[in-house]
Image (cartoon, rainbow, N blue to C red; front, side, top):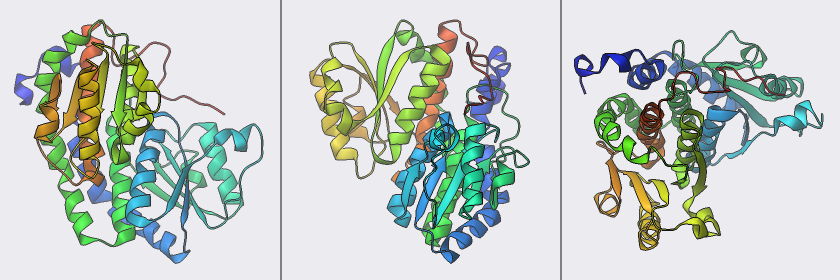
Length: 356
């Protein structure tokens, strides 16, 4: 959709503009931070690090979930999400020897995330930070700092910093693997993001259908488990809907009982190793009469959807979370507007949330 055709009111919304900035932000990251990420990869290899502990909150925590799958699958690393209260409240931090402790935070200001990195520094573990504020308190605790290069993010709900975080993690994985094929695939992602924006028109049309939706679930599996969590978070933040994320496997172990005719389920399932399982899962939902929104590039799966959202470009499964999140961001934006909410200032929320 050309910018000359965009509604002027939409251009006044920070969140709308920041969603559309994502291809350019990712392009900057890939250009400007490649060397810093290569240096981090060299430090990981040089110290024979096999374990990664990620400290993050909110949207950045979902980037950490992506890292669990990607660094695990491509680099055979053991990746865990930190429990910050062990560091700050219980004051019983784990032993971090032979680990990379990675802080992911757009602002670099949350005291609990800073505390995790500070303890890792005291234990002489390798430390790194992915942040949009390279001069932040968090960055001061790190041996290596990756700048998200996202510019100022004015909307409370994070969008461009999230995809930039995923891009940084993808580039780190490629650097650790020293894989020309992975690098080549990553280079195409900014263009894929630009193509995916075409879904904006389609989502603007379907959003009114869900104006009175009060609850739903979001399903992802494998690499897109993180995407399910991030879409659910955006819908909670912007539309105040009760939304729960699940893997398709976990959902079948009990929560499936919630599904009745008309129950909304968002399924994120780009093509990849999980596609056959997701096909069977969607068929189960359809038999139960669910209202199924499917985000995918797989024709047979989209044919079973109540509302298909076809990703216009296919990418390797390990990169698909970077593009698959865009329809979720746009859906949350348009549903918020449909309900008369301000997408730039969700109630009770602030851009920086400081927890301990």
